[in-house]
Length: 221
Image 1: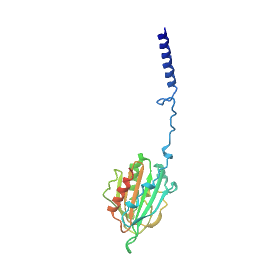
Image 2: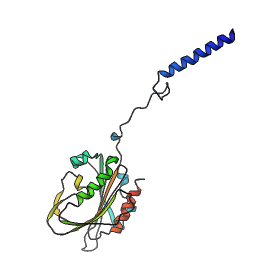
Image 3: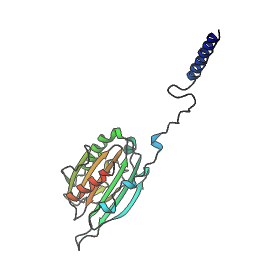
Image 4: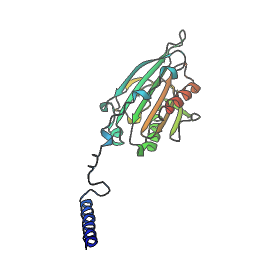
């Protein structure tokens, strides 16, 4: 009789435990509250650490500026494609004698990763819409499959609207009128990061820009 009573108590205890488990959130222990869901778009990512460091720059180049870009600078198209944040840095050499200064502009932007291949193609196509520049492709650096490299050569001196950083197709259109100037440029992306590196001036060399692009790509992990 005592064994039978003990058996009844044991079965009753198991039933109580099972019923308690049914009141908890599926897949979650009954005594643990599920963590709140965080909206990833509200998390700000610091882009400044992804900019080229002094050790990455060619001899004679120094950083001139570095700043976050605001949403007001971006076009409706950029926002529709998922623009989230941007950062732009400029670097320059002092030049040799009367040769003039050579500048490098690095633009770093966060977009929705699922749109990135299309955005890279759009930026590349947008660059080549300037009628006063002749464009040609360049050998690609080791910066992943979503990469474009191009050279732009001035064919006349007619003023044209330009936007630093190579994002003319996605900018707010607030560029200033200036004579077109030739440049070399690399556009690449990894994950949600899009980067454009442009080199302008008499000291522009593609081997240098290619090396800088690969150094910038390595910072993306």
